[in-house]
Length: 534
Image (cartoon, rainbow, N blue to C red; front, top):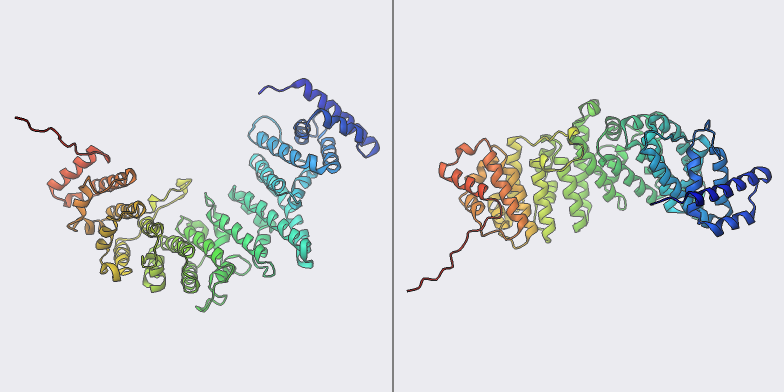
């Protein structure tokens, strides 16, 4: 798109006149503003003015950064409904552009930083969101130097808003609560970028603001927002050591004990905790994400922690939550996600889950899983515990898949049937072969995913191979009508052929499997429809 240089020059000339008038009379000439708006839109005006905000103070330009900032503030103050959103959008676009440049300067004065952060307390949601994105873009370009500069500014605004929140009521308190959440969100978005940024925030005491919001019982909606921030901290990859260590520290003053208490583990570590009626579900989702942190290779981050305390506490949270929930489908999905995440952490975690009837049945039982998607979720969650490499993870160089031991794999596989013994006589293979004939594609795909994971296991794989119906089902070209199902079956065949134990199979069976593999997943036997004639 071509730029009308002459038009921009006219806008710039008018801005210079406004700036001179502002310096002389400390106010803007209404007539000049009217003439400006008559000839150009506020968006175009700001697209010309905003780039001067980020110029080097030493640079000899038509408008200095301080003059541009003063003029921008005066224009917005004169007609907020006209100029606020275009200004916010222009700042976002310019900072986004400069953050990707390696040659153009991106200078942010302390005065400009205060103005950007102050947008977090405004009424306009989009403007506030833009301000957070602008801070992230600047941090991406300038690094920890900027984070050290912005954290105290965010903390100052947060403390002002917190004081308002705790000393007022009504709309004033609601607005202050919103501002606290926005400040916390900006802090979280910054620390998620780099481990260095998290260390800066911890050194500045900024993360205590997020923890404080979590404990403020007078404002449950604020607590829910804080839990959302903790879920983001616990789930955003790549995981960083400082963030992981802070999240998993169980000492007083850290968030872990508060989150566990909300999820049903009492402060004195007894077994009588009750999940918070309003916050328990959100707290459990955070616990689920924290469980996954235990599966990540964080030796250096969690070496100083009591891993037994973490495992037993997370298990208690899952146990108490299942006892207290209504059993709705949403609750069940949440439980499946949380339990499987915890079970994947280690053999000890998996043993805690399957040895406890409450958590075992909450995870593996189909009896209350009336909907096909729920059954599929159960099957897939077990598959991902048995074979963590199935899970698609960003930045895989920081992820160390750790499948359970052979003994625990066999124990979990047997528990699937035992949890459904009233319908399938307690035999896991009978259960899976029954489900693979289901008319529901989601259920069949869940079975295939689990069979593929089991086929890779040295001992459990033999359980499949020794069942008389397994290979006829796998080699049949007629049983699976869907493209996704045929590809899933093909993946199982590939897993069997690549298994070191395929030498235990008969030569004839190996030939059949290799023929199936060579023909591909979608091969169909061609029928000869020629009619014999005399």
